[in-house]
Image (cartoon, rainbow, N blue to C red; front, side, top):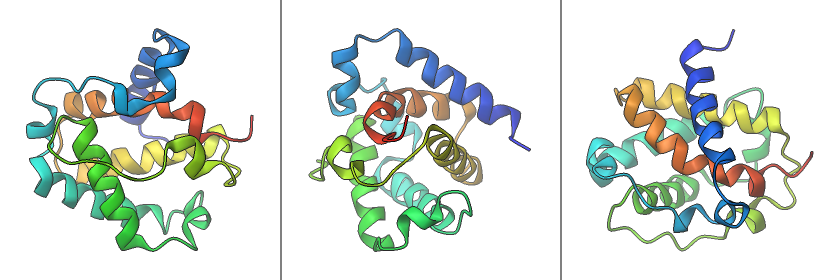
Amino acid sequence: MTHPKTLIALALALGGLLAQPALAQTSAAKATAPAGLYQALGEKPGITRLMDDFVNRLVVDPRIGGHFKDTKPAALKESLTDQICQLSGGPCKYEGADMKSAHADMDITKGQFNALVEVLQSAMDAQGIPFAQQNRLLALLAPMHRDVITIR
């Protein structure tokens, strides 16, 4: 059963997405970080812990873990930490591939994207990140869905 908070957070994040111009949806890196989000996530050490937990959950999730079978977890954790750090207003610089290029050959469905959001929310819950801060982060990440979902 899907956790009701997951559905609320996803609806809020995707609801914010619908109000954005299409061009703005192509690059979450251009999004403005909500004030204080980086601090609310525990700055780089907190984001690192969150991404460690998230990737550990992700690679074993039966719905989407198979997408990560050829991925080095440590490299993924480092890349995601930099990406979330930068998006949330921190001093990090994400130097990885854009989301469209990174996911082009992965055959990702909307259901799998939603599963990833659920895994992320579980990791945020486990790390004690307040629900309001979770929604602020999800709102930053939601525009990426157009570049990540490759099977429509």
